[in-house]
Image (tube, rainbow, N blue to C red; front, top):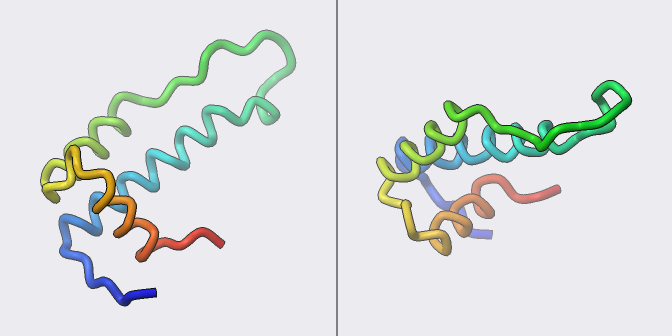
Length: 78
């Protein structure tokens, strides 16, 4: 694995994406909620806005290949 050094904006974008990912996973985790009908999972607009803003500031909006390569290098799956 390469030792990529991220800029502050790139690091912020990766961290915002990870927060978004964790929020989505928590919203989809219906096992922890009360029994009964469950509405569609929602993600707070502020979490989505944070990720979009961070990606745009890092110049990564619309450049998924580069972003996911940085994410994989910086935060590999266990």
